[in-house]
Length: 85
Image (cartoon, rainbow, N blue to C red; front, side, top):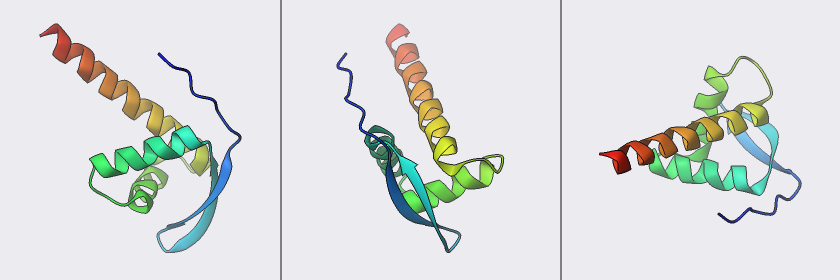
């Protein structure tokens, strides 16, 4: 498995429920978020709104990182299960 070079987080501006907000994400997290949004057939901003709505008023960037990690782990478990059947 190739380990990606992680660059410093970059600020991104998005709208959450019509309000402009800024968040800082590393490129691998931003790319994964875009892939997940495509898989769910929704815009990235809509996915970010849903993440913001379900997080506990914490930092949006952190909530997105946790969401991306949880999504990736769920997909990995599905892959393992499908290979075992």
